[in-house]
Amino acid sequence: MSGWRPALQARRIGAAHERKGRPCQDAVAVAQCRSRDGRAVQVMAVADGHGGEHYPLSDVGSALACEQALLAVEEHLSATDLEGSLAPDLQAWSHWLGTGLPERIHGQWLARVGEHWRQQATAPEAASPEAISPEAEVPRLYGTTLGLVVMTPRWWGYTGLGDWDLVRMDSNGPAALLSEEEASVGSGEATGSLCLEQAARIFRSGLQLIEAPGASFGLMLSTDGIRKSCATDADFLVLAAHLIATPTAGASEALAANLEQITNEGSGDDVSVTMALHEGLHIPGEEPAALARPPQAWSGLALMPALLGALLLTSAGIGAGWYWLQQRTLVLQRNPAPQPAAAVRRQIRQLCDGPPAAIAGTLSSRRSQFTDLRQGRLSPASLLAAAELDPLGALIAGSFDPATGGMVQGKALTALGLCPLLVTALQRQWPPTSNTIPDPPAR
Image 1 (cartoon, rainbow, N blue to C red):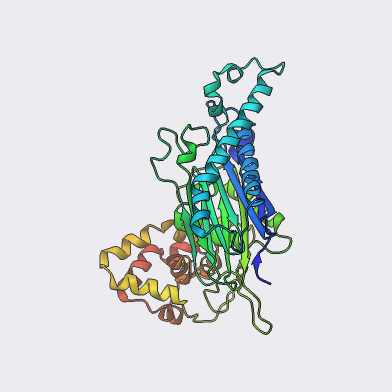
Image 2: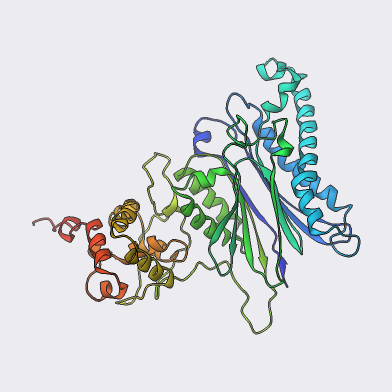
């Protein structure tokens, strides 16, 4: 069969919020519904309440945002055909995602927020500043972002406002960030928000046709806590690729554990994610495309189960620290002279063919990788396994000799095929072996 697998979802309160006794401001929801002509549709949503003293009810606002988003989609689809002569064309669906759906969500969210506030205001314990706010100020108390993805048999699309992230990963390519908020879209708010009067006009949306029934790809929709936990956007995409590979049978617990790791060792913010895979049509006798296996980057490696900890900023703020998720030693099994993956060879050519001064600067930007490999906080296999997504990291790992704690030598170095300038630059990043491996203590 081909089509959408059931979406996974997970949410974790931010480590920093938990320490301060604050509620989780994130919300996440998934749903399955049917169009009027019986076609199955999946929907997934995330929302991130703003938190803080100006938005004291934003945890309620985010939950209402996801609830009303899913209801608005279900309401529209139940009265609309997806196939046949009565079905809207793609342009009409695109207009709905960009205009009709945002207006419906915003209107319904405002109504539910007003209803909740009136209930709060009449409660015995309602003598609080937010309970006596002017009615026009009420939506601000519930301020939240919203990201939404609708997945049908023929197309999929997204809409939403604020700083949520949407990533796509194809079975034969790297992960790509599809949508991000423009810097000035919030008009004075830190991010676009449903509490703004003009909220429906600042939704961003898109629609993509599913090119063929055999297309295999994954989508990940997340609140901004995951991206903020990574040192760079490139790291975020590597992390997203490994999270997208999670949707297999019984993976919900693993996904939840990954989010726990992300908030504890990352930004400390609330983290929420929902993901779905579109599977290609399986032809008997042929292997279906699979996203659940990370790219094999180096011959003979024992690949890791995940790459999470290697890509996270530490909550203590130690720069762009690269920390290994597993608290155990990984045995690296490789040939005496492994051959670099194609992406690593391209990276080597790019460095060697470019300006000589650029080599040192490029390697210096990854100094934390050199340090953490040498000190055992990062396993080479985590970088080698992701060579197609981060070829520079794989190059650095390939130049590392775990036995000595320094740079590889002999046949292993020759096999990398480095130009002399790159060899010299790498040698400067790795300290002399005598400084790395201390002499055994005298008896």
